[in-house]
Length: 135
Image (cartoon, rainbow, N blue to C red):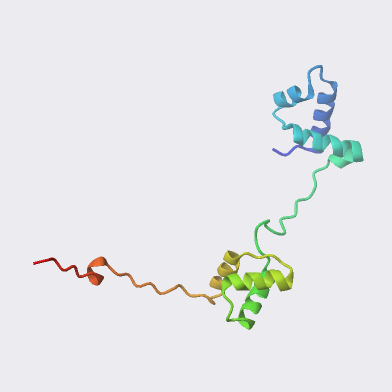
């Protein structure tokens, strides 16, 4: 739940003026202590105005590789087509000074159609083994 600036201020006043401990008061209010102390630090540093809700910037997902880096992986893979995904990951880490895992390189190249699925031949035991029984 997101609290408004005035609600945060009211909670700070309530906790400061409470006769019981801050943790017990916060527990009764259902507010995590780390959240309260973040608000309190903002209040001490910037006053009432600092309690205003900040803008969230969903510019990038934390674990998604940016498109520019994906493009760079593809460029390097085309230049050095003789390298495996593991060698390509090592090369990028060593020369570009950016870490990328072998599995990430594989997924990027697979998505671009540069890696095809391996051909599997399914064999059954009956096809390969001809057991000769002693007569």
